Length: 400
Ligand SMILES: Nc1ncnc2c1ncn2[C@@H]1O[C@H](COP(=O)(O)OP(=O)(O)OP(=O)(O)O)[C@@H](O)[C@H]1O
Ligand SMILES: [Mg+2]
Image (cartoon, rainbow, N blue to C red; front, side, top):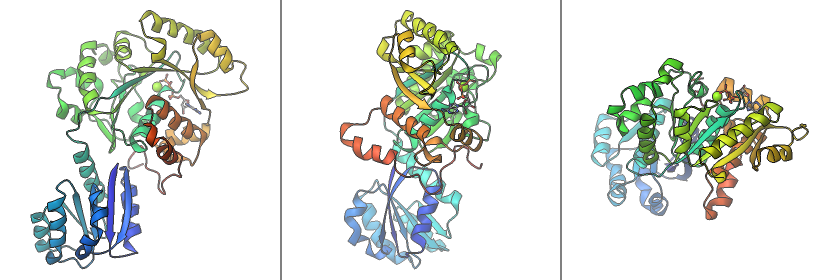
């Protein structure tokens, strides 16, 4: 989340700048004050707590940059962006000299402002050593909703909880998580990465993932049984060690295959979500899967049963599931064909697509269950989770 302070000399341009920031898809918090570059001192207290200061001043001249210079000399970590119509070369040079990296001309170019924001976000997150929690999503039968849940949970954590999130698609036949998040081909797949595992470091990993949102990267699945066959547990181990340091949350869409590679992912997961539905096939297969987890030595607390497409009138109700599984149902998500289809076809993440939609709320609650909020933040952030959606919902598939 980039704390952004916009100081604007125009009541007309300010909302337009806010809309462009919104359209970038990068998480930010915005405060807007009226003023010009000359008047920065007056706003010193507000500037102090910002990551990014945007000064929108139509009459900006190199002279007025002394105020910006003063601010940046006291706050070396602050990023400053200037917005002004047709900035002259003299102004650009003067801005650079005082430490301003981004001078944007009015009217704003969507791409330029998104790139500038991505740059600020990357700088804010760089160099922070994280201790990522790994959560795997498995199903005992196809079509339970594992991918839909993993993708949308990843987006919820990235966009609403400001976590750095990685989604790894471990499905070995029909890897489809990356299709749900982007129209373009991924730069590399898990199989490509593993075939060059000796090159693995943070920079190489970064070049292999698909950047879906400022906080969300996706490592696409092999998507080919032959290539999947070449993946080794030792490769995955090296990848997981690296990514735990780079991300707050690592979500693995394991799917329904329980093979040595999947078991390795499950061994190294902090939690396993087993996604089931309310029918007899899941009842039996789910029981069998929980037995396997027990044989693998996983404590009961590590495994969370998630019921998807919950139907309170179904013959197999939660009590029957719990009795058969010998385990509590940790969470259930409602069925919502409209929202699920919209998310699938248009790449609109559930948590931003439909205001107050039950499925979106269920995903947000699952995020809070798996990544509990610090007590002090609970009230305000939960308030934000269920707050009204942004004016223009960000899309999972850029350019859709
Ligand atoms: N809560 C829900 N409400 C309505 N439709 C849903 C819900 N969850 C998933 N679906 C739909 O069910 C279908 C299967 O979902 P998904 O692909 O996520 O399942 P999966 O477990 O990953 O399947 P696979 O075994 O093929 O990997 C999709 O069309 C999806 O949109
Ligand atoms: Mg799937």
